[in-house]
Length: 153
Image 1 (cartoon, rainbow, N blue to C red):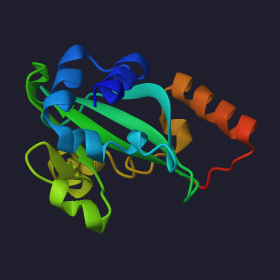
Image 2 (cartoon, rainbow, N blue to C red):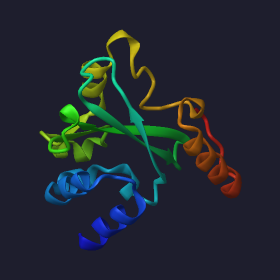
Image 3 (cartoon, helix red, strand yellow):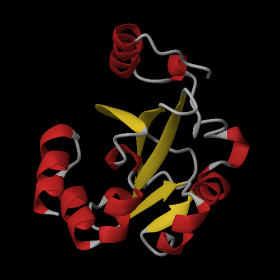
């Protein structure tokens, strides 16, 4: 586990408090899509999103390329009240991993219900590349070009 935490620390732009949270909550580590490297490609960047509802929360979007389905997927870590002490990871897990859902890992549909009023975050779990930060767009486009992969969404 220490090597995995070291990898995340060196490659993912998470604040120290999120790294500590992942370290003490192994179910979060298991649920992180970018840790399944044979299926998902991460681009060493995050989307920071300010919600219209629950304005005190900070939302971090984690974008990955799904090699199997050839689409972008975005999960979210919410920093509750933006005080860097309570976080929730919202994702969609395969049925055989649904036992991981709990207080630290919740289904992406719960995110949509809580933060998706007024159409906010509509289609953000499978984002259009144009909706992402230009730096992420560039990294994704470079990856697709270098690997000769395509993007369906």
